[in-house]
Structure formats: structure tokens, C-alpha cells
Image 1 (cartoon, rainbow, N blue to C red):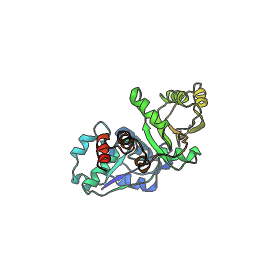
Image 2: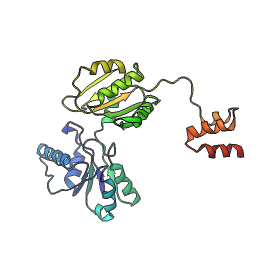
Image 3: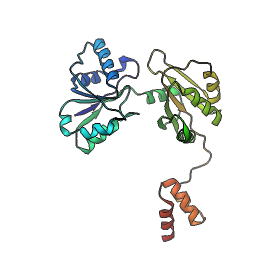
Image 4: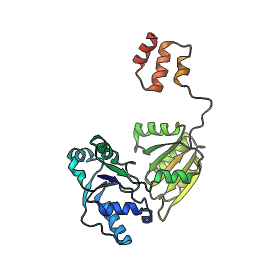
Length: 270
């Protein structure tokens, strides 16, 4: 059986009793970085007086993911197998989802334990009243792909949540202040750790403030949704418009993801 176990994102006391038991019973542990996981289990073992020795560790990350998956068999999961990310909930910005998918496709029992998660913790801390959000992970470092993704974030009609490293946070705030200076931003630093802190202000004020701050630690960034005026068009609205079929086909293709050619042909047939 496979069990996906969340690990603390900062404070070791956030580990659950159930997680400790599953980790103690584990025979094989897949982890993003074996050094990080071994260090964590050593600390937990000392603090909780538990024995985490005699475990088999295998690295499982984005660079070796396919090779590991190809090496797996049903026999692998006759052991007590655990997957952990470096910190927090598995399958969030790590390759754990492909292990789950493998189990589903091969009829292998698996379970996911609830636990620490930076996204939901920051969402609860932010004070935004919105009940929906989009998660973007880490933006690309530079180039067209970063600009495109940032444009998606700023045009989202839901709260946009993303991760940012200390090396690029000021760059992100500068980009946000240029594109939409008055957009409200919430920042959470080092959640559950000793130097946890949070800030909420418009993009320009935060950029000016952080120019003079020594930025350290990992950050969660939550961006207020774009204010929308009026109502979004749906498929029925477009179909009822008295416009040329080619233009109608382009609009329908845009919101459905279908090819313009296919949509245009269907319109002609109807």
C-alpha cells in the first residue's frame, strides 16, 4: 500500500500522531530529497522518542520521476510504502500525483493523510472574503512564459495564489506595481516558523516597502481578483448573436478550446 504523508512546513509540532505512526511503520520511503527527509525523521525521532531507523529511502523528484515509475511493480507496494515531499502536503508542486495515478491505474491501494499546507494556511490568514481561488505554483523565472503567466494571474476572476522565492519576490512586486499599482496583495513569509510574518497592502506600497527590507525565506503571495464589470458571455449568448459565422466560430473556439474550423463547420451544418 502507498500512503502519502504531509510533513511540517515549519513547526515540527504540526506533525500528526497518525503521520508519525505511518512513518514509523514505513519500510520504503519515496522523497524529493533523501537528505531532507532523513534529517526531518531524525529530529522527529529525538523529539517524540521514536525509532525511524532501518528504512529504505528512494529519491523521487521531477528529474527522475519517469525512470522511477517505470521501475515500479505491484510487488513494490506489498511493503508499507510512504511518499513525502520536502515540506507540506504531497502532490502540491511536487511529483506525488504521478504516484497516485500509478496506483489508480494499477488497482493498488493508497491513502492520503491530511496535514500542513501553506496555500490554505495563507488563504485563511489573508482576510480576503472570496471563496474561490486559483493556485499557480512558482512562476517561471523569466521570459515570455513568465510574462504570460503573470498576465493570467492578473486577469483571473478568482484569488490568485502563488509561491515565490526570496530572490525573486522584489521583482514580482515591481512587476505587479507596474501592471496594477492599486491591486491588493497579501504576502505570508515562513508560515509556522520562528520568523513568520505577513503583509497586506496595494502592490505599489508593498514594492516601496520591500525595497528596504532584507528579504529572506519562502513566500506565499495572494493577489486580489481583477474587478469585473457586467456579466461574462456564455455559449448560448454567443450562439444567439446576429454576427457572421466566422466571427461566432472564433468566439466559441476561444471559450471552449475547440478548433475554429470544427466550430465553423458545425455552425454551417446547423
